[in-house]
Length: 82
Image 1 (cartoon, rainbow, N blue to C red):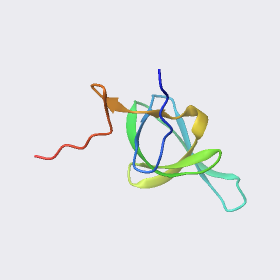
Image 2: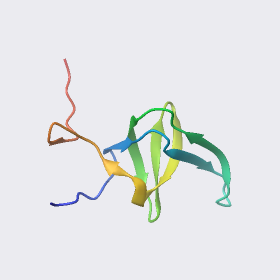
Image 3: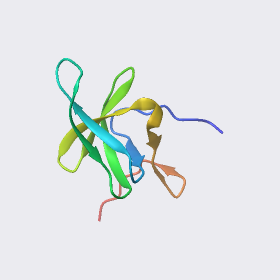
Image 4: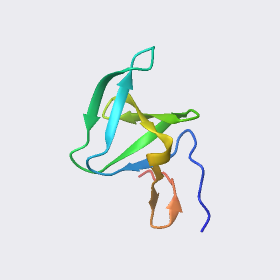
């Protein structure tokens, strides 16, 4: 099984009880959010140890080793329009 490296624009699956954080310039946590239900978020920027995600109108951070790519019915990040 091939593991896809996440990159900007990918959708990521966040399970319930996943914790997102917002950080100050010095790296300390200024705010956190524990998800009450699963969510699909957009990856905005991937750094060495963490990524920035767009979640409910704000930018949050999450550790890279906890993020999983979201694929619909075996298709990787396909957008559909009506």
